[in-house]
Length: 104
Image (cartoon, rainbow, N blue to C red; front, side):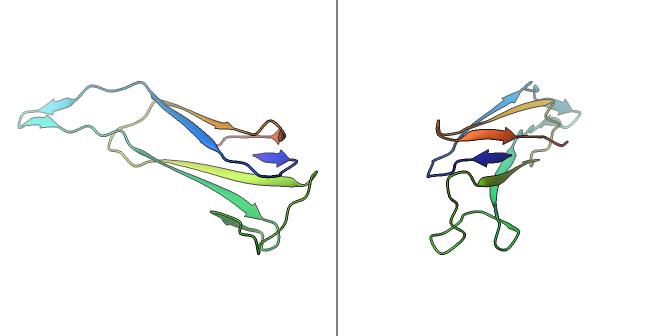
């Protein structure tokens, strides 16, 4: 995800798991079905070319017009398949989305 016109901002994630599965059972009783995910959002530090959790005041200073790259990684940490997932990242109104892609 590339963004333009970084000033400051707070990100709000809306994550919705779709297609809930019923509990499974075997001959010994009920098996616990757990749908869990982990979500990690990182920003690319252009000075070190490393993905980091946060940029600090002593790190690279973005200016208006600069591109900022983010990476969102979602991992299924549960014990069942998640058929569909929807992730939304709400950007401040003064940012412009340039490009976004998703990989499975």
